[in-house]
Image 1 (cartoon, rainbow, N blue to C red):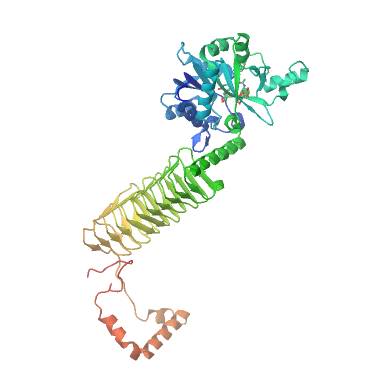
Image 2: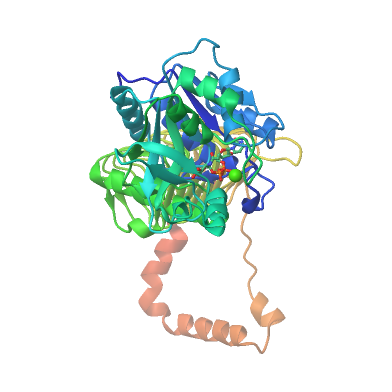
Length: 520
Ligand code: UD1
Ligand code: CA
C-alpha cells in the first residue's frame, strides 16, 4: 500500500473536550504511553504523507508544544473563532501549499485506535475509485450522536446528516424523518481530492442546528458538482471510536492494551495473565520472555529475549537484557544487563546500570549507580551516586551516604572488592580494586588496593554487669544458670576452651560473608 502516499494529512485537534472535565486538553490525555494526539500523529506519519498539519485552538500553546515535541516536521495550524470541523479543516489547508493537489486525509486527534494500515487502505481505495471524497464509515448497533450516512441506490454517499439535524427532521416529520434511524455512521475520517476540498469549503456556511461550519457539507457540494462520494465501511468499530470522557478513555485504553498484549504474544512472548499486564505502545519484548501477572511495561522499555519479568513489576523506560530476571521491582530509566537478577522488592531509579550477571536483591534502592559485571548488591542497601566494579560484593545493609545536606557526592568501589555488612560509605570516598571494608564501618577516607579498612569502636566486655545492674531479672537468672553449668561442664570442655583462648586472631571465626578485621 505504500505507493499510495497521501499528499497531506490534516489532524483536527482544536476542540475543547469539555466532557473530560480536565485542566489538561483532551488530546493530551494518554493511553498506552502516548497521548491521544500522539496516537493520531503516529498513525498519520506512518503513511508518509507529503505534509502533516495539526489544527489547534483550545490550550493552543500546550498542544502546539506537544506537536513540536513529537514531530518537528508537523505544521501547527491555528483555528480562528469560526467554529466547526469544516472551519478547522480550512485552517489546516491554509498552512499547506496553495497549489496542493492529490489526496488529503482528514482525521481527528481523539481517535487513538485508528491504525496506519486503515489510513493506507483508505488512501488506496480513494485513489483507485476515482471518487472526490471517500469517508470511513461503520455500522453501529446504536448510532448515538454520530452523523448519519445517507446513501443512494448505487451505494454512493449522498450526504452526511448531523444527529441534531436528523432529529429536527424527525420532529418535523418531513421526507428526511427516517435518517435518524440509519445505523451507518460517519467516523469523521476522510480522503478528499485537495482541489474539491478547497473549493467546497469556501462555499460551506453555518446554517445548521449548531451554527457551525460543517466539514460534512463538503459532500453535498461535491455531489451537486457531479463528483462521486464513496464510503469505506470498516468492521473494526474500535478504530472509529473517539474519546469524549474518562469512561471512554479507560475503555479505549483497555482495548489498546488488549491489542498490544496480543501482538507480543503472537511475536513469541508468554504473557501469563493478559488481564493484569499493561504494555505501552513504545515498549518492545524479545522472544521467549515470560511476563508474569500484575506487570506494567511502560514508555520506551525494551525487554530482551528469554527474560522473566514480574510478578508485580513496573518498568518505565528500562532496558532489560537477554535472560535477565526482574521480580517485584519498580524501575525507571535503568539498564539491567543480560542474565542479571533484580528483586524481589527492588527500586531502580534513573541512572542505574546493572552489568551482565550482576545482582540487585531484596529491599535495595539504587540511583545513578553503575554496577559492574557479576557485581552483587544483594540485601537491604541504598546505592546512590555509585560506581561498583565488576565482581564486587556489597554486604547487607550497606548505605552509600551520598548527600551531605547540600551536595551529592560519588562513591567508587573497585573490582572484586568486598564491603562488609552494615557499612556506611560516606561520599566522596573510593575503595580501590581488591580491597576489603570491615562490617559495621563508617568509611570516610579512601582504601587502597589490598587493604582492609575497619572504622568502628573496639568491642568492650564488662564482667558481672548483668548481676550488678539487672539483679532479679530473668536475664540475670539465665546468666547465673549459664555460669553454673559452665563450671559443671569444665572437665568435658577444657580442650575446646583452650583452643579458643589460645587463638590470637580475633577474626578466625569469620571466614566469608561477615568480613571484618582488626589490623592490630
Ligand atoms: C463530527 C462529524 C460527525 C461524525 C463525528 C465523528 C461534523 C460536522 N460532524 O461530529 O458527522 O459522526 O465527528 O466523531 O464534522 N474540531 C476542531 N475544531 C472545531 C470542531 C471540532 O478541530 O471547531 C475537532 C475536534 O477537536 C475533534 C474533531 O474535530 O477532534 C471532531 O469534533 P467533534 O465536535 O467531536 O465532532 P462532531 O462535530 O460532534
Ligand atoms: Ca461538535
